Amino acid sequence: FLTLNDPTGAIPPGILPSVIGPTNDYEFAFQSRWTIYDWGERRSRLMATLAEQSAACREAERTRQEIILGVSISFYNLIANRELNQVAIKNLERAQKHHQLTMEKHAVGAAPLADVYRAQVEVAEGKQELVKVESLVRISKVNLNSSMGLPPNIPIEIEASMEQPTSPHSIDLEAAQKRAVSHRPEIQRLKNYLCSLKYRVREAQSECGPKLSAQAGYGKRDSDWTPSNDEWRFGVAMEIPIFTGYAITHNIRRSKAEFCQAKARYDRLYLDVQQEVWTSYSRLLEAYETIQTSIAQVQDAKESMRLTEERYKAGAGIISDLLDAQTALTKSEATHVDALWNYQSAQTVFVWTQGLLYPQ
Image (cartoon, rainbow, N blue to C red; front, side, top):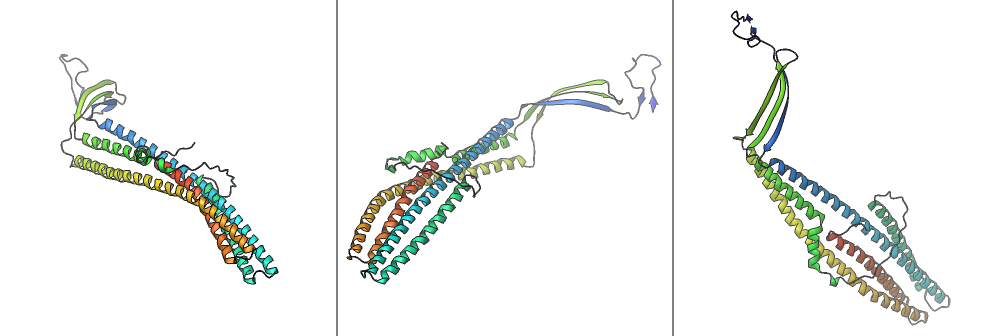
């Protein structure tokens, strides 16, 4: 070390160090930085995040509508199977009635033993059909519990009331498709996602521009362990990317490719939604027409059943005609029940395809 002395006294004390050589340097400081301009990077990132948040909300809405749709379809299936159970009970009662009739006629010699056996087979088939339908009712209850998020063993009781089916011919299909495009949460989610990707492209492009920031700092610095000399810093800094190994270019191209891919998915979904509206409308129309035809079919089958039964009692008919009429009546009643509740399900699906299915 070299000690400096000023024998003349011309230099004020404390200006020059008394020692020249290695010294300790202690410093602590607080620094702040405020971005003045960043070529739109922060705004693009903010808008992209907000768009992604909206897309997440649309996805939650889509999930909610699918849950409501699942509960509605399970509910109508349970009602339909319960009504079919009543049809099966009536069919079994008719089969037992016809069996008793053949036994009475056989007892007086008016019917062969083959008619009795044929009627017994019909009774057995009616019991088997009733067992199947009762199983469907139990399964439908479990499916309804599952769609509502309940354990399968919880007993439930439902009350159903049906409104008079109205003709779908008055529905404006083109307006329904427009509503679907504007209300379906899947499309709205993809719109928000496209908006997010658009801002991601801008964010990637903003990396090419300069960034201007203001910086300020305060601290203490000295050769002692506890610094005592104040130190202030103020300034403005600008960062300009000159060469980044083509990373910015690749980021921009990747963002644009993701946007084009999402746009293709949006166009595909746009067409799929319109197709779903058209298909659900067609099925609604089919269910309505089936109801109209099944009403007349049930009436004709009942009249045929009555006349055939009277003919058989009078000895003018055979057991095959009686059982065929019974089968036709049961089939027409089952078709009518299916048509009624298929119409309710089809109407629910048609509303869902337009994005209008909400809890009441």
